[in-house]
Picture 1 (cartoon, helix red, strand yellow):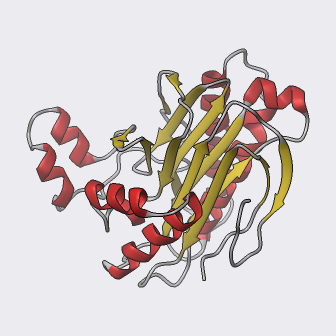
Picture 2 (spheres, rainbow, N blue to C red):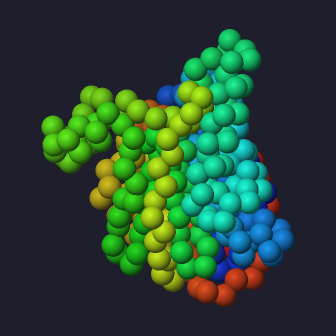
Length: 278
């Protein structure tokens, strides 16, 4: 069964599905994911809807600790931040999480060196904002047009930018999982924040850990996404295919769909085993 953990407030016409799976090899799921809306309308109108996926690292239980801390602190601090812009608040939240994880890593030997990747998305007033550290990714499906919206902070991507290897070479390069940035591994972290982008009705946004994109190429993700009947079956089908292809890592997939401009809010409670958003 797919494992989910959160209680979320979801606008009826902006649907979300977040699913995570330990995969076929690992004993512990070090991924975390969350989609949330604050209860009060003022904060909703100021900060919008936040989705975060984090892929922890560090061995034993410390990766799980790091990813959960990242999701918790980013969720809390983003909505508490008093910055004027969404982009600044999102960046501040990730940097705050970085400081907390780093300080925690110094308190106990079992946490030493722990860290996590982060990919985050905010939807507000027909405008989207993304911020990330590491190699967890954001994709968009607009009609049949599929687009990767973030570039990994990895050794392979740096080689590609410098013209050392081709785009095709990045997909199977032996160093593709060597990341250059992570949240919590150092006192300071450089957060990449996107330029604001326009949201169109029926846009779908997919956030994932590398447990998905290492097992499926972009065209396979696109085909499964298009063939699935709704966003909930999409997350399940993508995870299932990643496991069929080997499932070498934990797999987390979150999809957010902007269905229309009318927002009516309701509470949705997720179980530990499955979640369904109506």
